[in-house]
Image (cartoon, rainbow, N blue to C red; front, top):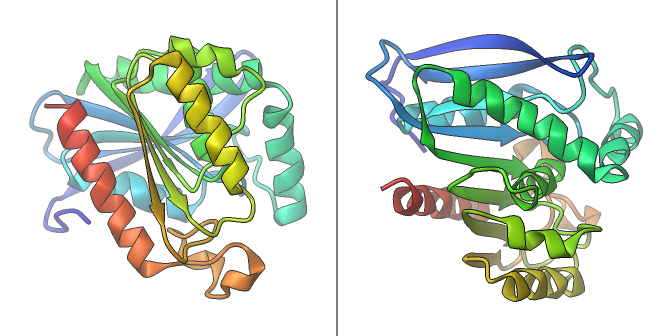
Length: 245
């Protein structure tokens, strides 16, 4: 999923959104080789964790500068799914806050001297996929957005007309948390707004199909699927090759 021979520079990056202190995780090749496309990665509802840091390092090995942004606040990390649902719910219920918080992370990436600010993208997982889409709907200057098994709903579907870049949705065909009617609503939203969008649906995959920590029991609605994980990462790579060319 990337060249493991590449030596990486990684660091925790403290930044602020209003009065809230946040802590992101930045990665790029070391020594750096000049400006390159920048990608922010948005965590799932359990918050910034080793999984999202691993994805950021994979992006860095592909030649990007990548930042895992923090939606919750430095040190604010849910201990279980119940706490995660409550925390994520704050931002799901307040989309302007969600958008503004995500944009604060994007601005940190854009200010880094290695970032080519004309070539930036956002990816996200589950809750983070929904965040990345809301950031795009806000009119953020992104070349593209990729959602991995992400939330597709929004209370502001007309804001899709603000999307500047291309959109790639990577979705589990058996995902009970984002059912087919929600997918159809999203397609209609994109179509009406004239967005350049695509959806790839993976058969037999449920929610959280890219995360090994999701277990291996699809009957629970969330489970790892190695084939869908591998295929979705390759789809993202092809998408980035297109939007960053």
